[in-house]
Image (tube, rainbow, N blue to C red; front, top):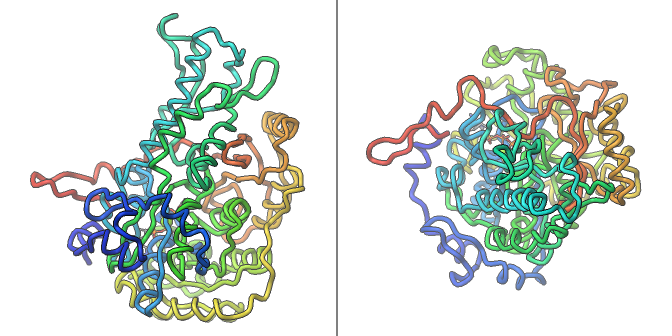
Length: 559
Ligand SMILES: Nc1ncnc2c1ncn2[C@@H]1O[C@H](COP(=O)(O)OP(=O)(O)O)[C@@H](O)[C@H]1O
Ligand SMILES: O=COP(=O)(O)O
Ligand SMILES: [Mg+2]
């Protein structure tokens, strides 16, 4: 089989203006083209759609993944193409890949095989410049902080309390802890600082949660960068940074329109990871999709305990959106992994391990159906190494648990391979909801109680414990009036616990909170558990070493 980049490179794309006008009814005058195959959809135009009825919202999530991932993005694209194949007006709403993983471990994130969004090299690299704009605005604030201190520190900022990091869209562990301002008085005051990856920054979260230019500037102004020596929060607005930062993001917050290999529309906008951030594409794009199409297929990162939980408890809570159904991607390989099979042995048929791994899938299904009241459909994303017996067994086990499951072969076959899944989703959308939609916790709980709710009800943890520094930080955040905000738990994607090796569906484990960060502008509190890094490192053999440029300009090895 051809590689992802070979498949994408061989495709004939529709002009993006044709996708916009013929599939979405958007006039060319409302687009800002970035070449022939990418365009931003004008915000003023999108605002004019405010009275349109909303389409149905299909959330794509998954069981706890293996390191390469189980195919949520791929399935989101395949399902969108399948719905189109059934004559439905569907659109995919996806996140933009970060160049961290593109050049690191996982590679690109534009789907795979014959279910990709294109132009995949653009989408995986610089795309329309949104991440560069976010980094520029983020780092402008960092520069304004140090400049304020250098020029007299009128706000009396306690430089030891500055929590605002610089960012870069690269996995670079060497930048996690740095000292800035070295070199003597002309260079300002030395202080400890550090870099996060762009997709972990609060500004990325603001970008993904904002609803308008005014909302964007308000949220930016609310960012708390640190504290004065008297202990008062210092905001970006105090530093006069909010206007310039909003200007830098003015154009970027317009959603990006591209297409699938089969010419179906896709909005790719925003890119937070779901382990260290909230893991959902932008509200702007999703709301646009709901007004432009009858079915929106949107993905939340990693397993349902991360992306789907944050989609529900952060994105839906803030935007008022509600998922009409959840497509939970399951793979034979991930089930075997949770059934105790080593990564190196996942290609060998093992029905017993498939059955043993179902505990993990069942926990995710229970959380979505019973805790949050979201109907579920299981997509068995078939890999080449899966046997018929294994795939049939997954479908049977899901069905015996009361959840319809469908084999999907969209990776090798494109949309037609997900047609049974699409029909199953359409059927699920027609059935009356059995349970009422519910958040995992109400706003009124304290931050501690919110973390405990997620830990015990979603993760199956027995208790939450707090490092002293984390507990003190939490108390200060509540004292400063941010106690009603939702929480965003940063933890490993491989396990319901903070131990990446504790697979399956563990119960009674301890969730240890190491660090707490206030994202006042985004409107949530980040709770970092276990060994999570907001600046990942590169692996032993980075994907970057397999990427090349041929003399004729052809890009090689980008996956
Ligand atoms: N059915 C499949 N067969 C083979 N490879 C697949 C299949 N589905 C996805 N992949 C590959 O697995 C990797 C992860 O897919 P992706 O859709 O990005 O998963 P996720 O969004 O869940 O992280 C990608 O390299 C993709 O090409
Ligand atoms: O944030 C993680 O997203 P994927 O699960 O799509 O890699
Ligand atoms: Mg994905």
